[in-house]
Length: 344
Ligand code: NAD
Ligand code: UD1
Image 1 (tube, helix red, strand yellow):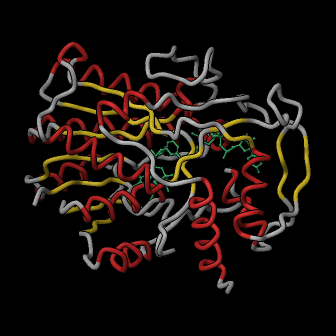
Image 2 (image 1 turned 180 degrees about the vertical axis):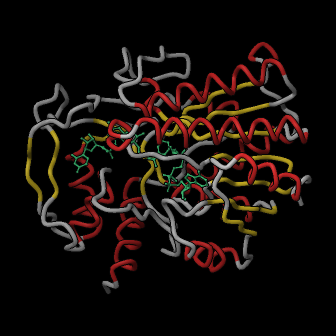
């Protein structure tokens, strides 16, 4: 069994990926500092897979601790690096926290990869690197725009760090640019647990339906789109998780990223379909039978109008495509919210 390190493996996307890795017979070791997750997630993962993953509480900002961890775990064959801070607004208020947490941790990990000959690395990037696109759907070679937040900038810089490192070492890396992950595991054992007031649409919807929030604000209905609200590519988190397994298998099989790319590849992970905010709201009401209390308000600063993925590269090269529907994603998110709130 190949041993894979999953950083941030108790977080939202990491926990779903751990389950998929275990399903594919990988031995998983999770490190997480619990800054945005709970130790209870381990139990959720174990309830699904019946196999407790190994876990170590580790803050990847502490270089000496990271070195010590690798000294004790020389047999790691691949790394999936989720650990990062991800709140766009917070990154504007506290940029140094974001540059430290999202860049230093990556650098320390890559230094250990170099020291121990760990050559397979998968990185969580984001469609935020594209900014407001010039044309849709967005392909991987679309122009990278100046980042609109320190968070977005850390993803752009991280991609550069990876590319530069791959070009001068044996490292093979894949950066996965996620569009908008939503939903939860069908068992409702794991899901998204945002700290404080949710910034993202679907957790806000489910918390409103559960009565935790009074009403949902629809940010902008005067955009140049069919119904006036913004368009995004919402992808089920389990589909997203599966893509990490396929990407890892690609690296491990030495089906290496093209040599002219210096062992570095980038893939969009989305459904290829754009949905408006109002469509998501309507779909949630229809699928769950829950009436949502919402109001239309002004635009949110920094929002792009419309963004969705061209998924051809991931479909053809990774042989991966999404399988789950928006309805399944919303239903699973609602089931998870009900469980968290103790609603029958
Ligand atoms: P999350 O916050 O749920 O998970 C991240 C995990 O990393 C958390 O468990 C947190 O405790 C841990 N962590 C943070 N800093 C750490 C550190 N210094 N040392 C150890 N552990 C640390 O976030 P997520 O939604 O699962 O996102 C995972 C990755 O995907 C992140 O890199 C994020 O930027 C990226 N991403 C997320 C989205 C999204 O919408 N969720 C979209 C695009 C990209
Ligand atoms: C945001 C981040 C992006 C990050 C992504 C995934 C910004 C500017 N971008 O993207 O960097 O990669 O999350 O974590 O924050 N909406 C409402 N009401 C709400 C919440 C959201 O109408 O209460 C709308 C938004 O205006 C947007 C859509 O829903 O049109 C999706 O919003 P959100 O879930 O925050 O994701 P993004 O803005 O796409």
